[in-house]
Length: 166
Image (cartoon, rainbow, N blue to C red; front, top):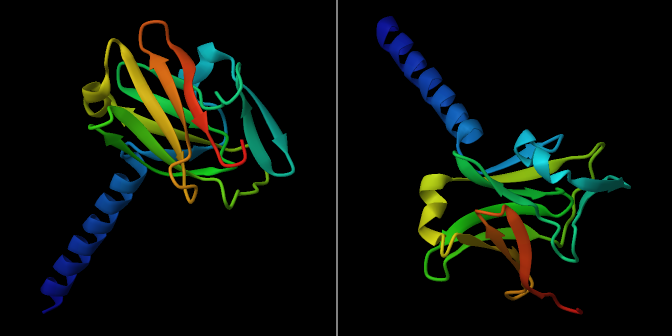
């Protein structure tokens, strides 16, 4: 009976460790305390005021830097308004990131969120060497920012921007 108990204990520990690895190592949305090195060439500027981190974009409403490398496509957020989830919309041909702008998170130092989408996942939505990234504002009935990222020039441009009260 004692041997059976040890086996179950080992099985439970292994499952917990595998779950931990899955949650923390899988592609997805990561919270980090600095701008990841993959964004180094973009020389990103940000403001940290009253507990909130905001990325300064080169043009109005392009405050979500996008970059890619051999492993993945990355989208950066200042983590004041949190990214909640993302998915590939194969019908629209877009990477859709849902952002909660209704309850910003105050933090004790600058924080950023990074969406990491593996090459194998986003390649299906590449058209003419470009990827569309839609930042969809939760609770705002489809209001969003649509960005275009050029894989060759590595530049992000604003395609459209709609927000209540604009």
